[in-house]
Image: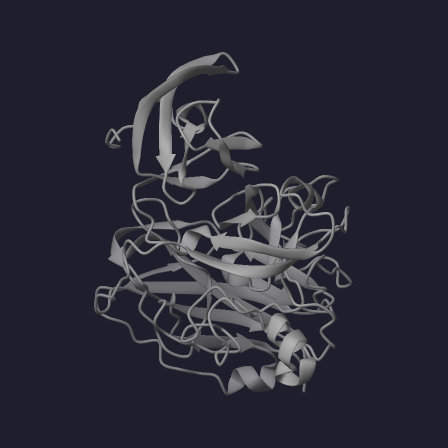
Length: 416
């Protein structure tokens, strides 16, 4: 069958923590022709057409030409997940809306030869700055765990032929029934097996070129993948020596659709496994899935997280081993959200540099501040401040100098 443009009409959801969805992607013209679904939305829906042409630093191996968005190098693979050839990703600009929404639908126009694939993923940001996880387009609209004021989309392409073209993407957001929320719940933690990623010089799934002594992690799902350079999805990983907070910049090890930190009911794959158990661990320990990963490879270790070299060494590992991982974005996000700046920033048990270190922020990260206190006065880069911010997700204080706002005393944050 000859390649041709197809219009894929998918009622899309940014998915709640209580819902389950399967993959909804375009794979070939024949499949696409059978995938037409009504796009009717509520009368108060907000619709817009995405600009696919402005390729930037958050994007990976894509180019826009008069024919549409396409992969740049058809042999390109990402590092940890050993993705198929012709991987590309386009992170579109966030769209701030004039009213709260909790549901998003998408209409994609694409020309896909046999074997090519394009996935539409969407997320939302609340007024406190926190993002929902990325969710792939579903066959029906799904309600968000909370209403959001900003919506962002991401396109992920796999095209070894180099012939696929994405011509357009139109999104529509509206507001459905209010979701049930678990506000105030602590961020989820689990004991998982960690391996060292290495692969210096390789490129991660978000476009970061891996450096010596780098600080980031890989998780086996794109749902918690941060844009390049950001810590919007970060984990606290605790090893034999100390804990470190590191951003999620790659996808792997073993699987790419195994968000094992989510409740089984909303896990993208392997929903018969308990929350916190990676598929690779179950395959290695008990022969789950015949001892294979989702790609049919024999699982040779129980890894559920990859650590970049700097993170691996900093937490005290000298060989692959078990660590405790807290998936920081999964909590109820108590407090007010702020960005940080700086690298290797220490979090202390008390509001003083003489206090025990409880964690580190490897790079810029968005954190939740519950309250603030006056503590030991310190000076960094010519800035002096005695303000310290309490971060409930880490159980400690960070100097407010490292909170990326102009004010020395954070606005709207109570005193501890």
